[in-house]
Length: 390
Image (cartoon, rainbow, N blue to C red; front, side, top):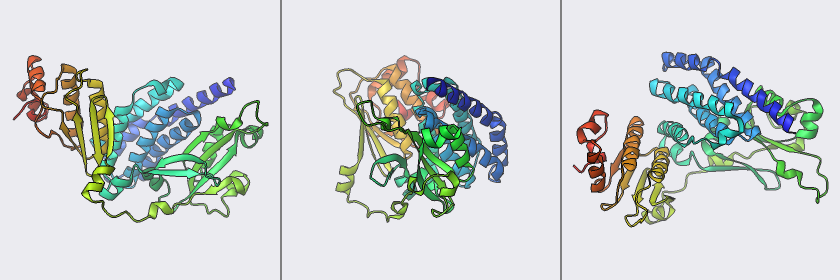
């Protein structure tokens, strides 16, 4: 099994190199075309990200899959003319594909890499171009279950909407790697390639847990699930895969059309706010705003790594961020660096980053000791109020 895994991984790496061989020139051509996009060219780049996502899903390369998925979301909006591929968009796509190839070359070790910043950048840029209602539901969970109720995939609503656009149907397909793939002289990547010729794979995964153990009755199957979107109708979709109809399950898409709930009262909205903690930092997020606070009484002092994670999460929300870091909170130079970096990231996306009650005095003191002044902040396009009281 290890030899087969190595062979499939080698095939995946080689396919990825082929997909990304001319990706830089293709993206530069997209930038040159601007709003007058070459649909064939954009589709080529989109398919590269999409194919890599499918292979990574089977091989359980989470970072590769997640990064390819975010690139795919943005490219879907480019080819739908919702996003113009300007310099900012192309630079981010170039950086994303470069990182993607690096991750694929690393194989299983790629999941140890920190790609949170890249994912946040892509999510933030995508969210900027969504309508307010779309933005509010984009990250909502869309579970996909077998007829017995077992949830196989949990997708974000934005990806499902993008996948079934153009009137496509959505199917949950059950393959058996032993009888449907290996016995026919194929590999899972062959299955993925065949399915891609007639539709779009939203997700896929192998379920090794289903093989049980030696204390249980023999199973003699290894499930391989595929979430597949296609314009092919349910009554003939079985002919595409040579599978029994009982293993191809149409997915109910009616939850996507459910009417939006009435706006909650202020009290209900406050109680429903999403709250996340990062060490001493607390990020509160709800539609239209995000707020970051810090506990003054934290005896450990400021933790720049926690602040960075909280700011990245706020950046991904795509609505700007208001901070209340506590007037008496300590600050070190690492925290100053994180805030400056955050200021540049938020500004690059046209998002606000400001202190609710002014920055803590310790920020200005620490910055000044390091030679950072209001003028030096202004020189890099940042408001002095990021570190210094007005």
